[in-house]
Length: 372
Image (tube, rainbow, N blue to C red; front, top):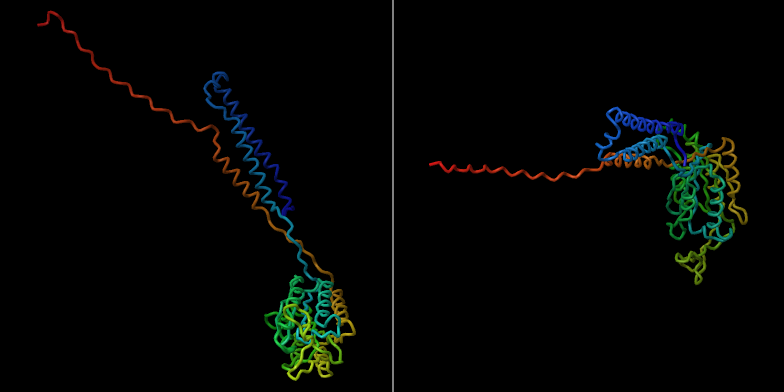
């Protein structure tokens, strides 16, 4: 428990002043009674001693004043911590979720290793405001945020077998670019982008045969965005595992995907695909990394991002608080209500009506004997 304005608590002695006023009033009342007459005779006129009730009412008022001062000081409890990256670096991981990412030339599989390395990189660089794009034939995005737990959950929530077929790298880069470029005027956008240092980390194993990702990268470069590319997979053809959607594991009856002719579907990082990925990185002066045996190559990207963060300063941490002033205010209201309902003397019963006296009947006059 802490207070937003702790200096207001120095006003608590005001409650003692209220108590002093109540005591002084009681003393003045007793002196007035002494001046009124002899104490024995005055006490005989009093039907109820209200001293105890006045003491209770005075105590209620003193407590109400003290609670009001505590409420003004704004008591609060700690609610969490907000991390504001000093670097203000925004980064979006665009992760390829095409079915070829199930290939096992990178243990345990391309997609599993890419997720593992991406999760580690996000956790190692909490100073960065992270976002994510999951793509195959279509793309879905999670905007940059400091809540890295949700970004990691987003990367693990999508599976290649549930994604549309294809490798739409251009759509993924365009969606990532829209999440990094602020929707303001050109001058304001340029200023914000220069301050936020936007980065896209593209992790893929294929070639975009539908769009023009190099043209999207060229547009991103004009927005000040740097695209680092990680090419996952070997140049040697690899079979694509047939994943059972119910178990998430290769189907034991048909371990690999086959085409209509019964031949196993193969995937490889072709020379054309690698040339396209290198061109994407070159358009934005980004880093191109090809996965080595047993790794995805994200270590080199992480080192690049870490150097960027260190070059601009350290993060700022802000403690968040939840205000609790409503509780002492409720106490003030309750005490004042009790004080208003509590009288200085008990309620007297209504006296029974006095019966009206019966009228006297006139007495008959006696007649004298000599009256005729």
